[in-house]
Length: 206
Image (cartoon, rainbow, N blue to C red; front, side):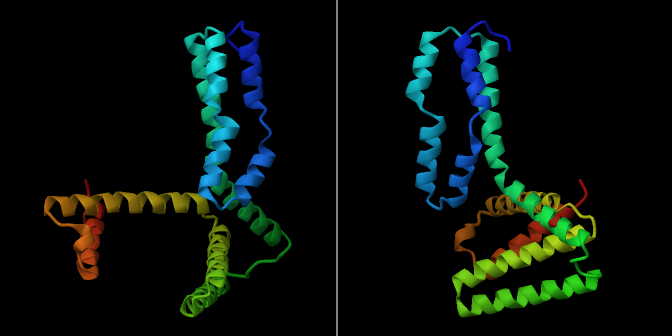
């Protein structure tokens, strides 16, 4: 730590050792975005306290950067919560497969994927929203199992899918702008055509 200020050292120590479990539990349980925003704001961004702290001591540039880095790291940890859930799923899958609780081959797993998809479709047809969410979870979990059976990185697969969609959607918007088209006013058929063109151009060699 590059500072002679005991108070700054204490602040950084506190930042490094924030009790994350209660916060994590709150994040898990809270479904109200406004409540979640207010919680984070009050818990970590009490600007009055920071202003009083900054006005009471003189900070070197490197000290400011260090504090910013630690805050950034804390929120990066929370940002990765969804990936941590996927890693938890992988741990469950591996633990089950280690004692033989898994499908004997890809075909068996694919049959289960088809079964879960049909169950999801039935739930959608019945408009049972609770069941729909449950079946989506079952389908995703089974797809994760299939990925694990074939040594695919499920998180990497999702990241790649997000990147691919983002890139193609950007291309779609560029095509629409170039041709003076309002995407919102296009028919479903015309949107599909524009999307297929974006996919085709995305696959062209640079």
